Image 1 (cartoon, rainbow, N blue to C red):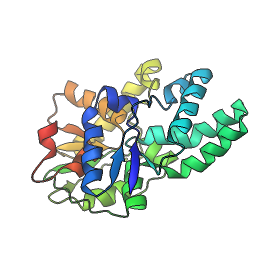
Image 2: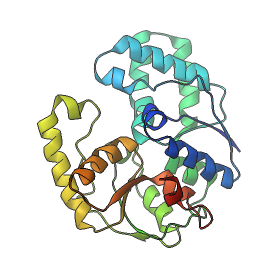
Image 3: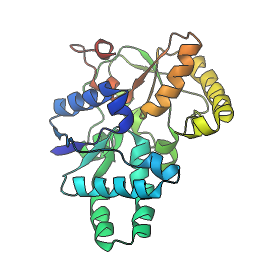
Length: 250
């Protein structure tokens, strides 16, 4: 089995350890991972802020770059949601029938990481070891757009040594929302405060999620509160083993 890794802007710029974890994890499972260095952005920020031309450009580039890929795995539910939910509208506006056909053929092969592991690789037990108390934050895109359901929980349940701690009000947004947190800072901060109350109530050692954007927002609040809890992407937990623990890469 072969897959192409689309690493996303956030991870490439701020959290490269997430990309490395995805590669270590998939290769351990026998998946051949390729990386296409000419990849750029999915175009979500551009589309969400009204820069349709720039979003068109990124969407076209993504389809052209991956149209021959066996599959594409993306460790970000927000980017996958952008591709599935907004690309069709962009291509409709563009009026390019060939591009629409190419996208329709490609999109069933584009996976968020937990989808790829369970639906494509067909496994829940990835051989991970992470002896810590962990709570899971369900990002809005994964919960409402991709409908990931219990996939992340099933993966965490098979991690040896890990204790899952339920998070109250799981369906609450953390308040990040990309540029929302900048344009509506007071509302975003209020939403983050409510989320932080629930996260801290778990008394977990780590808060995990499928989006580093949410984790950055939550992690910033934890840091300002001088809380001992850390944030970590799910890929890093799943890549962790007794021989190479995730803590060694943090």
